[in-house]
Length: 415
Image 1 (cartoon, rainbow, N blue to C red):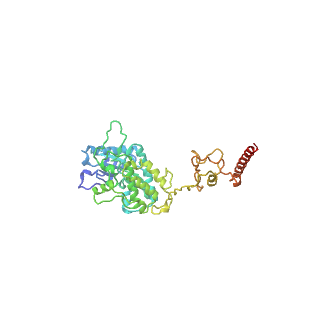
Image 2: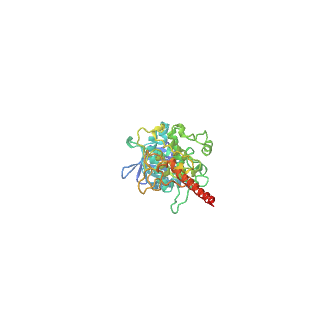
Image 3: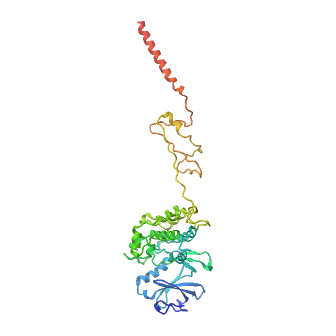
């Protein structure tokens, strides 16, 4: 199968062997800058996908360099959820090509078109948690994707099995750690990406981006899948970019998303990069915590989980404060108002650094408050002295005083 004759510059004749190894068989898809064919390795018989740069772009040095960089960027991220780049070269016709594993299934964009949503939190977690792990590996290797969107996520389902998400197209990626002898291809003022999933800073300049621009794109994707619509919508690209820079999205909580997950999404969509998660690793850990999963989780196994029902994800525990103590500063009342000290293990101070926190269900103890300039009682558990004991010294003092005065008066009268 070949492309239509009306577009001969993009066609590759069926049966042509590329690089002496890959026999072209059929057209799989076409984009703005490249065309993808199904092919077979003539030596091993393995089915692969071969991606060609359009012939019309051969004289564009930036397009050629970006096509080559896609192979380098993808090869630096070896992960099961990133499409595997197997080979690269220049065809006999002079057109650059990439050879990747052959994927079966559909893109996430096609799946969202057939199922606009909202999707269950279990489905979203099963798709995005593995992708976040792959994206985290890319960020740690100094690669920023800059075009995370449904069209670049493929749901690979060989023989109709359970789909495995694959991150595609590192063609507009940014390599932060340059290889010796290579230069940055990002040109000041250039904008790359898709407006619907583009961060505010990326809309201004592709040069001033880092891992947090991918965090923004994942936040848009989370919002789209869990809510069923985009966080920012406008009739024109200009109006959309204005909304991205200045408008606030409707809170996902008000649209049925659990508050803990909603908080993660809104932090991804913070206008300032400094207010977002640092990278995909931090975002993944936060999302796992919101879902009640360990940081290394790649799926939410609960069969009944659904982002539209609050009961699907355990709500955060309410913050409880111990009751305030109001008491007189009189020393006699201090012992009666402070609580009895709880039993403690020998040599362990309650609340001291390094001590174990109270277990679930443990009673919260009020703080031991000692007012200033008041000596603490020697024992909070000592019984209160009866009132008559405080009168004994007073009566003795009065008796001694009167006895002394009486003796002095008697001595004076005797003279």
